[in-house]
Length: 154
Image 1 (cartoon, rainbow, N blue to C red):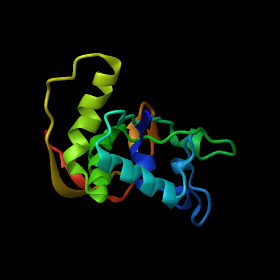
Image 2: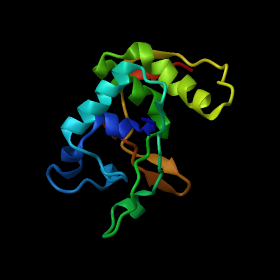
Image 3: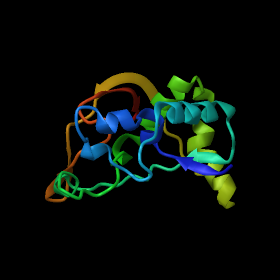
Image 4: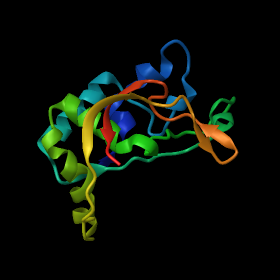
């Protein structure tokens, strides 16, 4: 098994995409899966498997490109990807595997040196912005206007 896993596939399921109508800012490919599938991904995190690693697949499509009859697939998560991964790893009870998933497994697989810089995440609740600037437009981030339980220092 080899794969990258996005924060949205760890933290949301297709019910979030479809509950109360279609939520275009949760539309991505591959499409969000069932809750059973999401839980299986969390189970995989607990193994610490070195062939699973971070892959945000972040896609900053402007609001007008998402909220249309044929909206673009993709979720913007780059503004808080590490914080979102920390939430998923905490839910999975696998925080001890977070650093390797985010920083070591990918470089090892591709045969490149791991980055030697360090970031620090701390448990602190904050509210994600409803939207963020994207040139002259705006993008809606994953978990817009929701509480996030981790924050990166700096």
